[in-house]
Length: 131
Image (cartoon, rainbow, N blue to C red; front, side):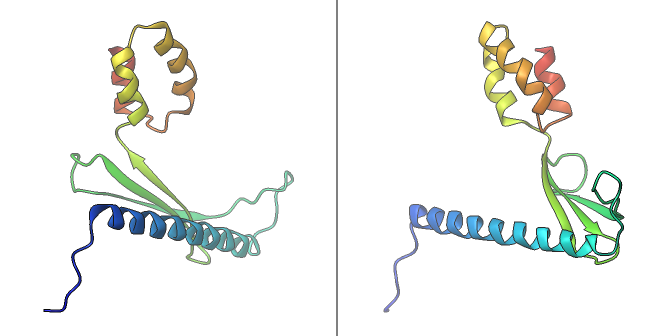
């Protein structure tokens, strides 16, 4: 048969990376455009910001409490367009990586700055602090 060989893992990874980068650029541009469109329906506040109505929806990769990953989407109530998307995780990979150095001066220095910006505001952060 005259068929191409299956795609190897490096080629597949390169394609996925390229598609992800392009999709991210398009999504950000679309959400920015949706935000500008939504602002037209609201009067600006004194500080120049806009107090807009949104609806938020979240979904997790698996049902129940066993999933480690999820997505939260914020949509305008008026235009029904997506304004923001955030990926959520029960685990912070930086916390996991640094937990092996717990007790060292290097860890304490890292932890001082990281706990303020850690995207995981839950289970993992507390467990690393306790170890």
